[in-house]
Length: 403
Image (cartoon, rainbow, N blue to C red):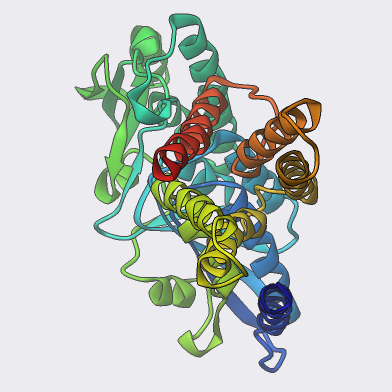
């Protein structure tokens, strides 16, 4: 048992030491730089905390401007709001660069920056509120979610000087959009208008001396608006199309040698890989439980027990590094395990300590894999259901394996 304890301590101390070393990076000479930070994958709490850490590290290294390179299908709305508020609180300018795609919550993050730039092959949009697993929201839930996201998009688009109608159409599938080509003297413009305001807008432009040359349907009812890079330029939803982050840095006044790339730390990569994958968590919990049971049924302490502890440690440590599990959840799990062991080996029969231990263990495991305690939205309800399935599924398979 002492060897196992030493192994865990070494892992913890070693991880913290390496983490501290990487936290100090980059250590290059301080001078004017532009920081490049890639945000890939799900918009979640780990992306938010990682962004804060990397922005802080870049400032220490002399960064006076930032490029957020985005490739994401979306994620949690509350975490997108946190990222937007964090970006808005920085003195330095932060621009977004959509490298491949910025959909759903990713579009919100892109709009939260001072300017949006897109790569030639990128897409942006489709901010319709959805639930994981294809779960359908009720009409009231959908209306409430659409109302908030649409208003958030409208505010951010207005702040950035982009088309508000285009932004809202990315979240409201019922909205119909038209584009008007208008001319006056030798000047030509393209205006995007919501269907319900189409007649009013035509009359307004004609009253100001503009001639409406053409009227084109941009988005029909029943779908969320998604734009390619050329469409985003055409409909005023970006500041330009740029071939690469290096070229964007040059446009912003920085040579390629002044680009400061701030990468993920090892623990962020580790936490993203483990805690964001329910099948891997399920496997780690199940195998860890079975191996610990085998150790209890054999004399001494050997390989099964060591592997079981390592598997469970990896699952919980990844959740902790991913800012899902706190010390409270870890203590709940440990207290639950201690009570169950006392019930098995010390206290005769099965009573209150065993029941309390099981409840603490299950509650701790479920809470360790989510950012909230009680679900506050239909999306969080689905996350809670997924965690229930992982934990209780592991228990069922563990029971079968023991049998």
